[in-house]
Length: 305
Image (cartoon, rainbow, N blue to C red; front, side, top):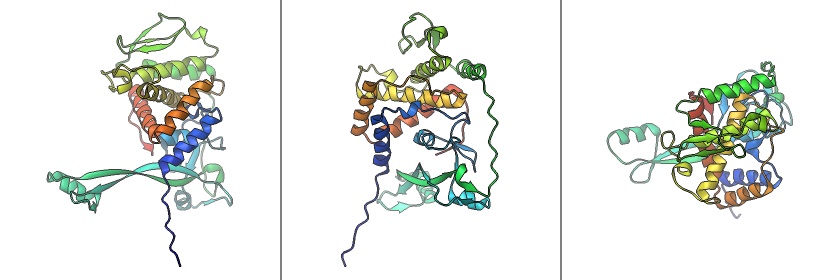
């Protein structure tokens, strides 16, 4: 009997293809309609999903983005509803090799590194599956009451902006164009009244605020510290970081961006091209967007990867 070789799935490619499919449909996942229940989380641990998981876990059919694994549900005396569809969560597992190329444990790696020996670390993308709370039976799960009003959502946004440590200089010199200038470390915004909605205004402001975190006095990100031309890989990656970072902040403040204008077809097409050229781009951009939001909010988070 001829033995068959099982081909290991390329998780980077799977995620990239999913993102390309959404973009082809005219959907910008980082501009999704964030739930009024806040950022997606593992309800068993209370930790929020971060990076690419923070977006995909909001693109399921479920209105409440709370999940747990089969094992977590079982440990709480519950079970998964028959026929329930699971969702994939991606994370990195670090493997270690010694100087001879042999795999070793984390403790052995620490010991060798402490002794000055060479140790190679290999981050490997992995996945596991979780189920939405709507498909979990026998577990009592509390969901928060949602009483947000437009005024409260705006106030939450203002608190994010005013609470940023080492912020850029805010100006209103150009009434027609929002932008961030790395040279002057200045963020220009039109007036709130010029936008069709408060959601539009704050989503745009968050986009430019994320750009400002790339300044050399903050996170020193290449897309900001280096002069780049429009459409270049570095420029495109920085724009994606800003878009995704703005989406994170929208989720944090409870903004409903359903009516926020979607990106133009040409802009979306540009990302399809960029993603096809680098299957790890979306992971890199999501990680940098997370760092930017961490800087703006100034909080230490516990996130489910």
